[in-house]
Image (cartoon, rainbow, N blue to C red; front, side, top):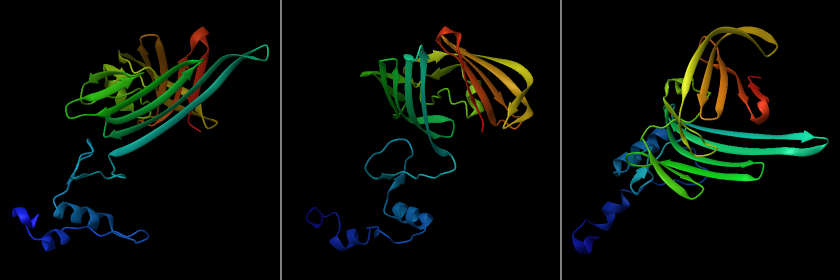
Length: 219
């Protein structure tokens, strides 16, 4: 660098941030040092000269897994496996990695935030979505305010309808509690959800093929 007049080697040595495995360091001190040597914080894109902070109050990583089998006369009539990891910044999806096997029909869905949108790859086909996208993230009641949602199983960006069903009593952890109920409909999907008055998720029911009801609830 000094050959091209960009500064002396000693200047660049002073711009190093020294970290050793096993050392205890203050996170905020490290962040300040990175900023001092001209790094910038970027929670969206991983590019040279930037850093990303995990554990921020607004940055969440949510993982889910579902497995069930439908048996008929002791034989498997239907088999379902689904795993999904989502990274969120506030109410906007940053990354998505989902894998589904629905009775032999496989889906591989990956997505990531780009400069101006959200790029989804569904079974090797790419499409660009708006910059702030939400999935059917029922743990966050703000998803009920959306007109379109990304289906992490198929990669489809679906029009949704949300219907308020009013106050209902449901059993949670063996006790009857008051809850606000909602119905969410999209394409061939129908969900019924219950939240506490504070907005905490309590339970969910979905209607599977054949009219079977699958229920998840807080335990």
